[in-house]
Amino acid sequence: MSKNNKFIERSIVGALSFLRESVFGDEYASRKGLLQLLDPRVKVFTFLLFIIQVILIRNIFVLSCLYGICLILALISKINLWFFLKRTWIFIPLFSLFIAVPALFSIISPGEPLFKFNIIWFKLVITRQGLSAAILFVLRVITSVSFATLLSISTKHFELLKVLRFLKVPQIFVITLGMCYRYVYLFVEMIENTYMAIKSRVGARIHYRQGERIVAWNIGLLWQRSYRLNEDVYKAMLSRGYKGEPYLLDDFKSGLKDWFWVFFILLISAGALYFNYRSDI
Picture 1 (cartoon, one colour):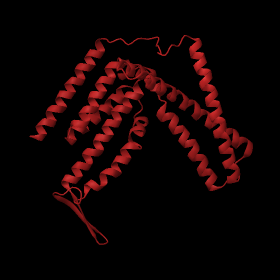
Picture 2: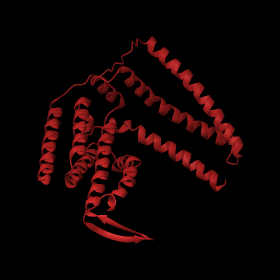
Picture 3: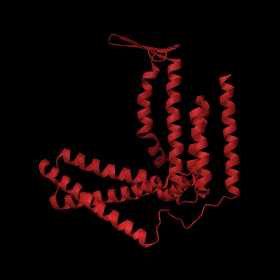
Picture 4: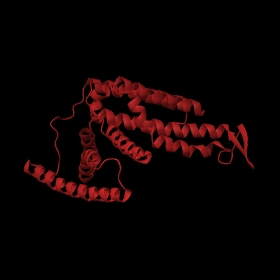
């Protein structure tokens, strides 16, 4: 097997495994952790409060404390910390880090110089104001993504969809989102099984033109199977009494623990806003 084929194989398998792990972590939502025991409606509202605070706060220390609280909540909720960090530090935070790099220099953020260095004919200066702005931007993105990810991990997807209906989100969007969530997982499994079947029958050595034909054939087959599956699922839903509004067997119920959670969040929010206000004076 050539190095290129090995690289392609590892890339495909790695991408499919990462997608399955990162998107479908319902096993964490089924655990008996702190966040899993809360009413999903209360959890969504309090996490929205966290995210709004992260957007408004301009103090790096307060943002760091909020991010620390997010990590503590993940641990208390029995979520693997490495799994959580992989989901929150890849893609969006790394992309924001590259965006924040130009803000370090005096050309974008003039102010008190910290570091000076020359690159060929250019003299670059990193300012204190630019460094603070870059850190603040990246920390905001990481903290916001972390809270949003923690909410999705600790809550089952159908409960989140029901909360969206509780918030009066149009029904067609909620149903479409739920269908997409289920179909993506199913299609990922189909692609993985098809890839393994091709590999077991054709082997590793295959001309790229033949590989293109196989890929095109599988795309068409996957489209046909998805269309047929869509029709079958919809007919099955109609035969079981579906009239446009999905129902859950368990209804949302708020308890004493939810009120304690709200009081705890309000206390943290008041403290964060207070220290942020004191730092602005």
